[in-house]
Image (cartoon, rainbow, N blue to C red; front, side, top):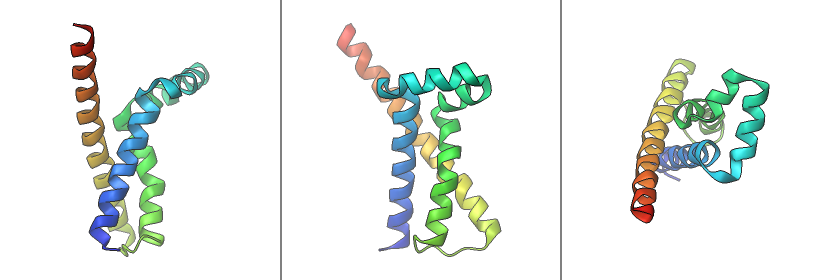
Length: 107
């Protein structure tokens, strides 16, 4: 598979997981449970941008070890930051669209 396509799919997967875990009702009990045990981790799991950093780390490790993108360690760190930032931007866009959709339904 093309490495750029693989990278794009990883960014989409991280963004999707970040949004699903941090913003949907299905993970609400998990977020509450984590928040009850640790305020720091609770804020992190409830923030899609923050969560994208946590999820992008193992995704980057997989990408550089098995996904066909071979880079030196310093570039792997930059790749991790790029994946988490792009995923955070996608999370923000989806969050805004979801809020706009909710406003139209209840107006």
